[in-house]
Image (cartoon, rainbow, N blue to C red; front, side, top):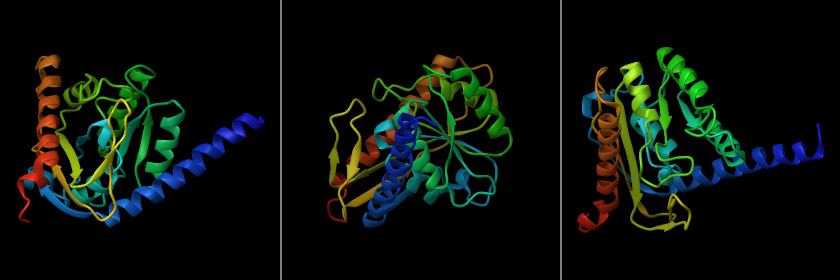
Length: 228
């Protein structure tokens, strides 16, 4: 093993472990309100898999949101994560939080990742997506999640969170970082079913609109509930 590869590996493991710890501590410090719009369609006792999506800028608290609504599963969940260096670090961090990864993106390893995702959901694993990742444009859903939903026949659940106080990075995704001890809201939307014959662009737009809707609900929640 070359020195450069050793340094790269240490960066992934140490950085991923540090990220997982910070995320866990932040998530525990926030006073959460959880809103399940999916109601009985997201039963924690049901082992039927689903597809869960959230914008790239909301990835930080997504493991906490997912586990809250979904609970412990017989089959562990997976998440599509890009293959570049930062993707490896993120993959290791979420693995420490109980979520496995499929390496790929819309620009690299897409077809291989698609086949792997279809195999995993057929075996009963939930699958997570950031449909505007890995490089944007921000809040623009790519076709991949619609394709997986159409091929698998599984429901798509849009997830979002926001906090009353937060920092927002000046990155392409405008990532939101909750401020410790703030109030937070997490929302899972009603399931979206994609018909086998549905036009894929129409399906993509439906998914994008649903994710926009729950994200806006989360962002405006505390301003609309100041008396709580």
